[in-house]
Structures are given as C-alpha cells and as structure tokens.
Image (cartoon, rainbow, N blue to C red; front, side, top):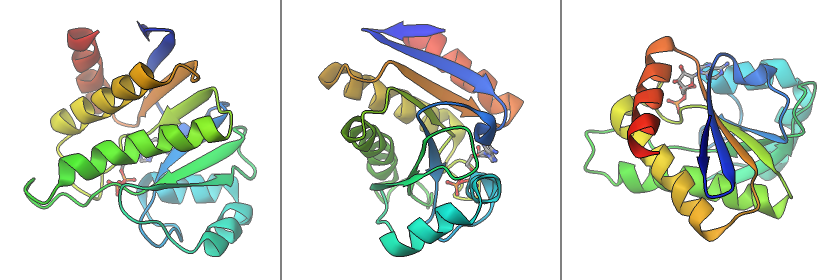
Length: 175
Ligand code: ADP
C-alpha cells in the first residue's frame, strides 16, 4: 500500500467487478452501450440496470465521465469514462487519458465517493502502451489529490500479472 498526502493507493491484481468499494470505474466507449474487456465484464456482472441508465445518459465524450449505479455488483456506483484510442501518441492521447482519470475523480467527489477502483483505461482494445499509461494514471491521481483530499482510498485493479508488475514498479519509483 502507498500513501500520498492522506489518500491511500493500492494495487490489486484481479477482476474489478468483484470489489466492494463506493465506485468502480469502467473503461467504456463513447456510446456507453457496453462492449468487450472490462466494459463487458461490468455490464455482465451488474446486469441490465446499468445499461438502462447508460441509454438514458446517451453517451460520453472521450476524456469525460458519467455515473450510474452498480446493479448487482457489490459496489455502489459505476463511473463510466472513455479513454482515447491510441493512434501513435500524437493525437492528444496523453491529455485525453489524463482527463479520463481526473474527471472520474471529480465526479466521484460530487457523489461523496470515498473509495474508488480504476482498471487500466485504454490499455486493452484501445492499445495504449501500459508503461506510459500507468505513469499518466498515477500522475492524474496525484494531481487530483494535491487539489482535493476527500477521497480516502484509490485502488488500481490490474487484470494481467504483467500490468500489475508495471504499476508496482512505477509506484515504487514515484512514491
Ligand atoms: P480499453 O478499450 O479502454 O482499452 P479494455 O477493457 O479493452 O478497455 O482494457 C482495459 C483494461 O482492462 C485492460 O488492461 C484489461 O486487461 C483490463 N480488464 C479486462 N477485464 C477486466 C476486469 N474484469 N477487471 C479489471 N480489469 C479488466
């Protein structure tokens, strides 16, 4: 476990849908109607209630975030954010990925969320290289904590062992 200011940061390897936190973050797409990867897993575990709310919301621009309840999962909320599709790194991917994390945290505070879990946004189907993506994730979270001390615990959930190792190395270096 890592501590930055008053916020605890934890890395876990596993399935984000199994966690019991105030909010889990979904790496969604612009339509917010479900998909593969973590998005598919969240909709499958949470059930139709999430999709119904997403339909009403009507979509989400890249880098922004929207919130629904978590349906049948143990967490309270799902924050749906949309990371960038990686197209070589010269299309503001870094900025959009940063905003996806930052805006998710802003929305979390609006809903009085104290514990939040992130998957590794954009590093699956969207192709963002994990080394750089993990640095951006950590930077965005730390910048947010610098401005806001309301979130108590932030968990990075890595599905793959190798991604977990990379996050661990980066956090060991930075914190
Ligand atoms: P994106 O389209 O944003 O790249 P993906 O869902 O394809 O989203 O991948 C994002 C990350 O989510 C990948 O690192 C993938 O290994 C991970 N992932 C897939 N399923 C789960 C899950 N159930 N819990 C946590 N992470 C998951």
